[in-house]
Image 1 (tube, rainbow, N blue to C red):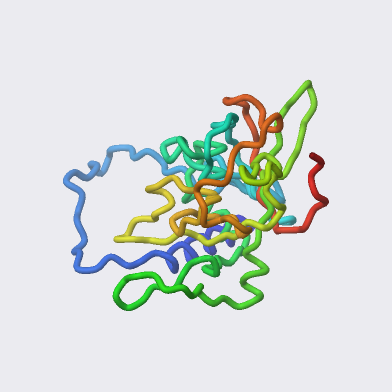
Image 2 (image 1 turned 90 degrees about the horizontal axis):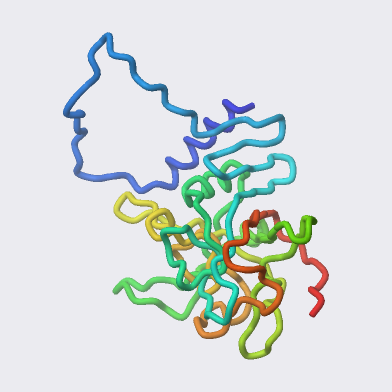
Length: 256
């Protein structure tokens, strides 16, 4: 089973990467001697049990297509938010949560679980490179399959607590929590052979960003002056949490 997933991993990742052009293969400057031991390369995917695989710090569940990874509270005050989740080397001055996991590893988890990337939130680019006012078209089945629900688990008063990440984000204009609208897996993109989400650290964007792996689909996702950490709901900065990503389902609204 693991071998099949690894083969799928290689095929899907290769299919999304832009090929390098006009580059001849380069031989390493030094090669190990025939009798020199070579350190074994650690397999990128580990099989934890019959249902779970691990890629770096990312754990994926094959049965329910759930993805989990560690993070911590990065902002809990009145700072404006543009991102729900970023890498610790990314835009932490405008993000609710920060994580050490690789965006590449997270993207591979999406691929292995067969989440299709949907570009529905991105504007069509004109021939002159400027943006049009039209959004890209996607098939309805792709849109439905790319929708996500992001939850958080953390320890409080000796108990495991769980909430939608939307419940930790408030609208500055209304004072209410972010609606439980879905997040959309867009997949980021490759530029000059580099995976942009890995370079930027953008994982889950509130303010629409095509470099981010995931984007919020609801109203005001094109404003960077609306979203704040929800007062009294977000635990103190530095609180360890676990992020859970799963297929979208419309939950009951959060209590005020």
